[in-house]
Length: 77
Image 1 (cartoon, rainbow, N blue to C red):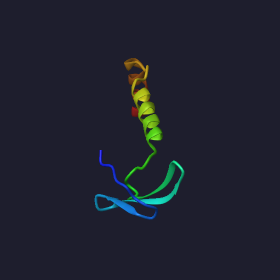
Image 2: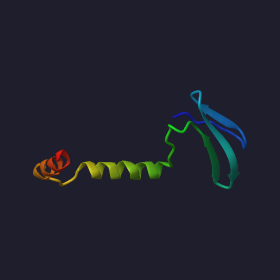
Image 3: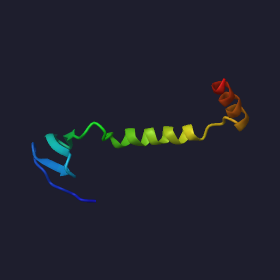
């Protein structure tokens, strides 16, 4: 892990097109601004983890193969 020290309004670049800006610092908290291209998804870690868990649960569906075949045949008609 790279640890950097920055002051308010200073920036950090990630690659050529992602820019982090220290917007504000109060007590034990910072406000961090992120400028990135639209195709780059930016999430807080806890939100990202929740999305990953939902995706994991969704892939472990209890739909049987028989139900999938029936559903598939409906779309073929």
